[in-house]
Amino acid sequence: MNFALILFVLLLVSGVLWGIDHFVASKRRSIGSKTPWWVEYGASFFPVILVVFCLRSFVVEPFKIPSGSMIPTLLVGDFILVNKWTYGIRLPVINKKIIDVNQPQRGDVMVFRFPADPSLDYIKRVVGLPGDKVEYVDKKLTINGVEMVQSPAGDYLHPDRLYYSPSFTEKLGKVEHRIIVENDAPAGVSQITRYPFRENCTYTTRGFTCTVPAGHYFMMGDNRDGSFDSRGWGFVPEQNIVGKAFFIWFNFSDLQRIGSFH
Image 1: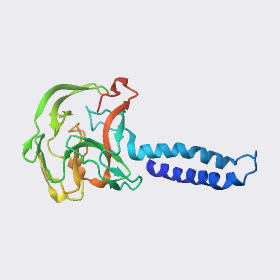
Image 2: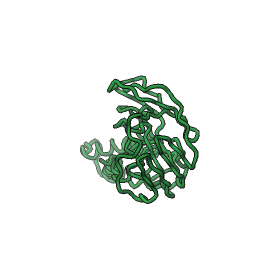
Image 3: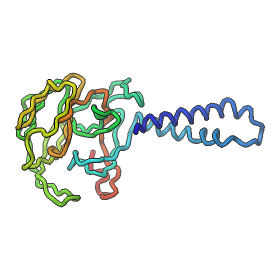
Image 4: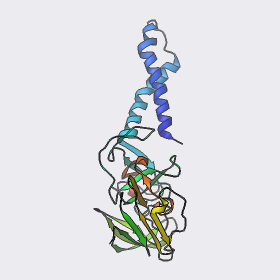
């Protein structure tokens, strides 16, 4: 469901009703006469919808984490806020950038429209920038020939399943974060789709090597063996970017999660 489009339609409808009431109907009504209910409701909802639409389109948008692909950074059920302007000001609904601000950096946690189905929003970490050579062989990440060092960070307890996974700290650019790597999971990519610029990637039983095309980004989940990401479905075009995740504002199952991610 395209909530932005629904909100835009509601804004148009309520705005038209407000305009009719403000510029036409109110001048024709006799003093003391009752305002039609459809005009009253439309006019009263318009400023509220306008504020929500502007905030959600240009400032910040809430999202709920639906899967465990970003464990241990983000958990299922986390409600997060996404900065909508840090990567540029975009027109609502069509998502066309009109003002350039910043570019995504390695290590950013980014929300984007899934390339294979733009009606779906995905969240992953930026690993590869345009022109980067990204390798993930034997579960070791290398970018432009430099291996990203993984330092042991103890075992991570999955609270919903009560089992442990090995976790590590990894640094991408200026961002240090934790990842999960399962020792018994296959090193190769198990699910590979046909995607644009597929010829930029080479797969083996030990992993893959990809060169990120211009205007695209390579995304991976922090739960390295539990994430369906750019390794399997390809690159994220710049026009699919939604914004940068920066804050957990609620989690019904664990209130201590609030503010634990930035």
